[in-house]
Amino acid sequence: MFSLQDVITTTKTTLAAMPKGYLPKWLLFISIVSVFNSIQTYVSGLELTRKVYERKPTETTHLSARTFGTWTFISCVIRFYGAMYLNEPHIFELVFMSYMVALFHFGSELLIFRTCKLGKGFMGPLVVSTTSLVWMYKQREYYTGVAW
Image (cartoon, rainbow, N blue to C red; front, side, top):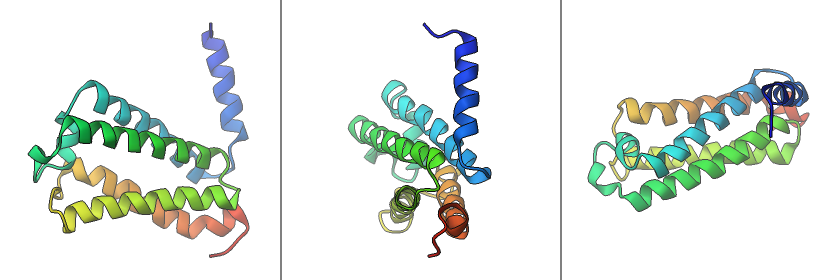
């Protein structure tokens, strides 16, 4: 069993191994938050997921919420790897593409399918995906040594 000291030591070692700068820490933070978002889709049901798709909440089912939670968890794993290995060009690109997929999904739900509206449930994913994309676009060469 892990002691508190083991957790602290492991956390310090992990953080020290991350690439320098704030972007990897941001990716780690988003990854951790995503774990909790994923869990809530399985545990608490539809309430929070329906806040994202609040223009047409009845289109959100238990199945779609769990699918969304699974998709969010996969994104969490990708972003965790990004936080740890952002200097690897293929990992950097994979993380970047995951944010592109997220932005496309939420953008299409807002503009095409009209299930979302610019409310507090939608703004989180929108801000995270656009901020991350812009930040990553500007920092690719710094982290990977490869320009766009």
